[in-house]
Length: 370
Image (cartoon, rainbow, N blue to C red; front, side):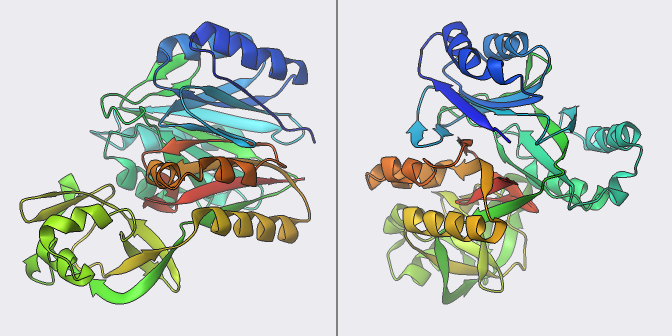
């Protein structure tokens, strides 16, 4: 099974598309995944990629940085060609106006059931896997993922589209079009097998903060344990409030599942409140987390998964923009890219990661078995 990747750093979107297509088109892929910097005109990239692969199902989104085997990039176009041997069947639905309604998610799964001839609830989660690419500024990720979980046992994994930290407009791509306030849901049949990697490079401390007053619609905590949120967080760090925001990246909060955290990353302090990058619910006990080595943790996770599967044919990596910023700050971006140098890999820096729910400061990966 020959999974192939390509990339271009050409600043012109048509030239970048042509460069990528020159490498991948000869593979005659059945599916093409691509991730493009928001510095390109999204509709131009979407249309050009569709024309470049007329016999393939082509989906993608905008990014806050790109990843392709061996390289972490910026302002680039990266793509992966999946042969029909790996993905002999794929069904794609575009869900519109996700910020206002989940009716489109229900309609998408009715379409999936019709296309496969099997109820979405009855699809074999060992043979089928889902991909989700979603508007990263919609604040709809939690609701969409919850609805997907209510409709199927198939795991959906993916990420929230980025826009290179402009926080102005993110787009998802399908059918040669660029969409805003939308999600791309793709259902893939992968008969040779697949698995997942979730790595977040944090460990829990003994300190727990429980939200007691929350503005859930705006992902904002007003109080932890009955105290002003910013003060409670600063106290847990042993720092004055004015110093607390400097430690968001190293000390986010995590909802614990045994020893494994599902990270909730603080975004900013406004007055006494703390805004987060994903939803936090009242009464949800959150552990203060300590950071560890992203590069070492990721390398170990990939080795362990490769050992378990015997051989890996390819990886799709949804890597949080906060992890990317941390790697950049530590001068480790090249080291992180090198972790994936020996396996065909494509991915992007996201505004949030999807796996069971919506999380932060995590890398969620779909791993194709060889």
